[in-house]
Length: 350
Ligand code: NAD
Ligand code: ZN
Image (cartoon, rainbow, N blue to C red; front, side):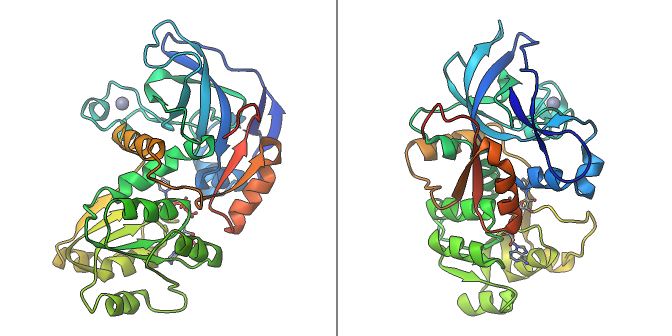
C-alpha cells in the first residue's frame, strides 16, 4: 500500500510502497483510510524541528493521526464495529488498565501510545487499530468533516470546560482549532465572541465564522481593546488556542475576577512567564487541556455533525490528493489555510 513515511531525519516525508498491516490481536480492526487531515504535529515532524528530533524515537514511521475510514476486517473478539462501518478514532491509544484509564481519564493513560508519534500513523491506505479507540459514526456525516473530528474534539474539550451561556468569550488564536471554537462557542450560547489573531488569512476566517469582533494584537493593545468593548468589566471566559506566551498573559489579564481560562495552547518552551499573582488575586478557574475526553467529546462531535448543528465548511479550507501531500504541508506552513484534508482514495464521495 502507499503511505506517507518519515523515513529519514531532515525536512519532508517520502511517499512509499509499504507492507499492508495485518491483524495481530483478537481486538484489532483493519481500516481502509478514506481521508486524512494535517495537524500541527504532522508539520513539526515534516519540518523535523527540535521537538520532532527529540520525540520521534524510531524511523521509518508512517505519519498522521487524523482520519476517517471504513472497517474491512475485524479480529475474533471485536464487538463494537463491523465490516463496512464508517469509523474515526482517538489518536491517543490508552492501555485500558492503568489508574488513569480506570478512573475515567483514558486521554492521559500512563501507557499512552500516540498515532504517528509513538507508532505508525494513518497516512496510508490501510491501518490496524485496537477496537477500543474506534468510534462508529453516522453515514450522513460528510467524510471531510469526519476526518477532522479529532482536532474538533480538542476544541470541544477546551470550549466546554466553561459554561458559555450568556458569557463574553475571548478566543486567542484562530488557527483550525480556534476557528472550530468560534462555532462551538456560538452553539454553546456565548453572548459575545472576541477573537484575537495576527494572520490576515485567519482574521478573515474568524470574521466569516461569525465572531463579533476580531482584534489583531500586533495593531492594538488586546487588553485595552477588550476593556473598551466590555465597558471595563473584562471577559468571562478565555480560550487560549494560540500557544503564544503574550496571548496567554494578555488573556489572563483581560479576565474578570472568578472568570474561567481554558488553555489548549502548547508553548515553544516549557518554562514561560506567567502573570501568576494576577490569576491568584482574581480567583480565576484555570483549566489545562490535553487531547479529548474519551469518549464524551466524540459523542458531542458526532451528534453536532450528524444533526448539522456545526458547520465546518469555512474551517476545512482545502483538499488535496494524497500524492500531493507536499502542497498541503507547504500551504499549512504558510498559515494561509484552515484545516487541510488529503484524499487517500477517491472511491467514496463526501
Ligand atoms: P495553529 O498554530 O494553526 O494556530 C495558532 C494560531 O494562533 C495561528 O493562527 C496564529 O496566527 C495565532 N497566533 C499566534 N500568535 C498569536 C498572538 N500573539 N495572538 C493571537 N493569535 C496568535 O494551531 P492549532 O492547530 O489551531 O492549535 C492551537 C493550539 O493548540 C496550538 O498551540 C497547538 O499546539 C495546541 N494544541 C494542543 C493540543 C493539546 O492536546 N493540548 C492538541 C492540539 C493542538
Ligand atoms: Zn492506561
